[in-house]
Image (tube, rainbow, N blue to C red; front, top):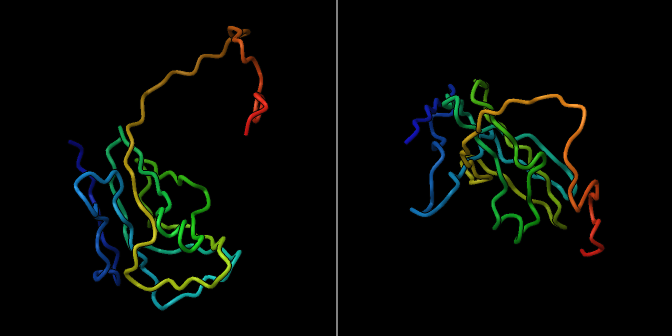
Length: 148
């Protein structure tokens, strides 16, 4: 088991640290650390503070992901999804939210706004070469099969 150290920034003592909502959850819910209520209008985006910093083991990264219920019910998702928090980053965790819904979305202090998933990052060695092997797919990119 890996240990991730979490520090609450000054003025955010009331904001919970990330929590799993069930034993089988992959993600830890992140909470809004806004100073006052914010109204996110349709098609607007905003950076929401969490009031937290972390010390992540070098073998891991943290990914900030949308909450499915907010996406389905209100059209709220995250830009730069998943957002990566590198093991050597020590700044405040922020969540870039966007309202793709048709109605205003209210963000209040302490509200669950995103989830944090920890992933193992393999060590790799990049090797520059002159050629790479061919495959049946080749360089076929987005939609190359003609299917949706």
